[in-house]
Amino acid sequence: MKTRRIVFNLHLYIGLAAGLFVVLSGLTGSMIVFREEIEALLHPELMETAVSGERVPLEAVLNAVREAYPDDTVFSVRVPRTPEQTYLLKMNEPHGLFVYADPYSGKLLGAHRQEDTFMGWVALLHAELLIGERGKTILGVSALLLICMSITGFFLWWPPNGKGIGKLARGFKVGWPAPWKKVIFDLHRASGVYTIVFLLIIAFTGVSLVFNKVVIEFTNFLTASVPRPAPPHSDPLGAGGMILPLDDLLHQADRILSGPTTWINLPQTPEAPLVVRKKMPEEFHPNGRSFIYFDQYTGGVLRIENALTAPSGTRIYNFFYPLHIGMVGGAFTRILQVIIGFSPLVLFVTGYLMWRNRTKTRVYKKTSKNPVPISHKAAQGKP
Image 1 (tube, rainbow, N blue to C red):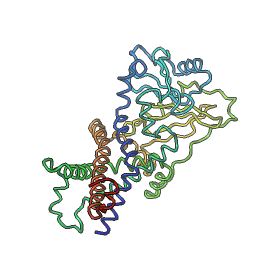
Image 2: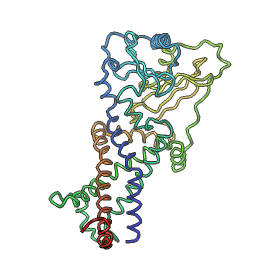
Image 3: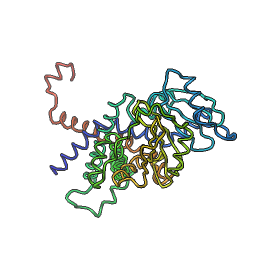
Image 4: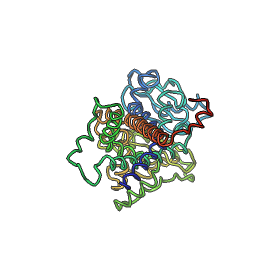
């Protein structure tokens, strides 16, 4: 019982400390599971276009963007994944200015900063609490605490000393006709046990995205895998060479790897490569984790990374992000992810009410055992 008391206090105070951050992550995560679909409904003039003939060369789109935004630099380009989808060009950095272009006419459709749209703001809130790296760290620590809460919660749910295992079924039920305090307790207990596996998966994969270097090293250690090498460098000495047009490099990338191109990362420094990102048909990751690195000066292929033939540690880590966002299993798991995202709210509210009830009961018992002296009552003008 002493051990259970320690675990109970640990579960309680971790929940009070990290509960609000976990609730925030759950609710915002539920919304961004269908981010692309929601943005297409809210901003169809930017996200979709009518199919009309062949696509214009991507180089023409880049030139139009550079002319319209001479003080900004194209950071990356999202290639349309359906005939109706538009180009998305991110300027300066991943969360900077977003510019949209029609792939058939090359016309610029509009632009906004990520935080200027509702879903963009929600995504930033979910990923970094709107405060950058410090926010990411806070959320990463909160995910670690969620793992601790899940483990301690299961320990408390399990009958002490293994007694009463035959009555475990009660832990899965809510006695709705019971007094409201008992209903709150049952709801907290049942919600926790039904969602514990999913919460552990979401929490661990969330930790892997925030503290990615540590998790990658640990995964490679467990699987005895070779670490993924650092990106190759372009050779500035080849700057005088004749680089192939970007569209020719994309055709060359298609010949190297058959999967569709999802993103193109343009070099931001003299030594950086041009990176073409692809999604192989067997990959769960929505953007793919296959890369082709080109020398930005000569157009030569510097390295090819096929996600399907990567070391086992890299392939396991690549699986964490699609698992985190519910992409493994299709529409069913995405809907399930939305539902699970509301469970931290239920657990926090019911847990808080249980804590308040215990606190009030403790205060009441204390005052009952120590009544106010008569002289003190008289001093207050009470009978």
